[in-house]
Length: 442
Picture 1 (cartoon, one colour):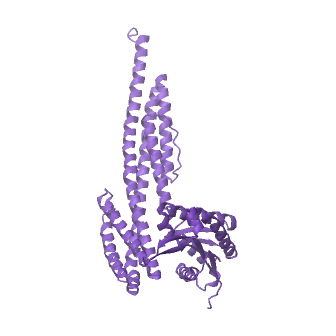
Picture 2 (cartoon, one colour; picture 1 turned 135 degrees about the vertical axis):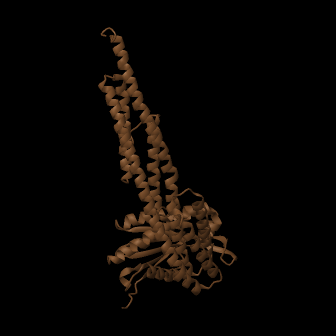
């Protein structure tokens, strides 16, 4: 019997045991990794599709609401074109929603959107007929409640979808833990049987699974900057790349979910209104600077979309610079849209900030024009009535509202006040600012 278990055979048996357990460990790890890859691809390619649709739909509804309010206040027919584009974008989003493979809890959403679209088309018809009072009634009594309900449903869907994603990430984490435990067990058996060759494989699997497990927990906890320390081209490396892409997608979604203007990356209407309401609720005195470019439409028509966008971006950067130099740490620079901006600061800094904005803007405007137009001092363009005429160079108008002068300040009242001052500023030459120093009597 002793002759049967020769040293050679013992070594061969030992290596056979090592190879067997190594193959078991590696095989199970590969199967687990393959399943991880499939589930990760589903998360990256499927779950975020729903997030994108919910985000786009919410932004579209808020954009329509903002345009409706502006159209009712300003009664500018050009805003109707923008509103129609928003409606067309919503149609496109709905088609994508219907054609996407989304969870069952999304099934009722198309019918709700269809009902909203019917009322929105009716409102646009009334706008097109210039029946402003009727449009205001429809917008407030019919469309606003529908939109509010739809936005609430979108928020519920987003919460439900986030819960589903968290659950999937948690299950992925549990699967990683299970794979880690069983792989480690098989590897330890091989090590216990004196498998030095298998030790390298075990260490590699241990490190890889541990890194993936940590990354899974970090991502599930909302830390999208998780670093996966796997530098290989095998399945672990591919899974690490998938995890990194998933984290990047989540980070991009988080950034896109912020209410920021895509051109200037400044906070948009929702962030501005929230900051206004916060300061009003806390009874914090503030100065509201409404900044508008004069003759910008003529400039954009003359120089084109690219240079027009550069001008818009230049003003956004200018406002950041001035607020950083002249303002407070908690001041807000916002971009309402187009060539309209808002700055919220303390009352004592509002006027000096307006002067600095005008001074720097006027010094940079010449760089936006060709030599010929700059020497002429104007550009030729077509006004809103189709009449060709000359337009002065770009100037900037700033309407400043002080919250302390309003008896019951609100975003809507401030907006109306800025619109009145804007109408006066537009009649003046050059860049100007105007402060409403009148105090409302109780």
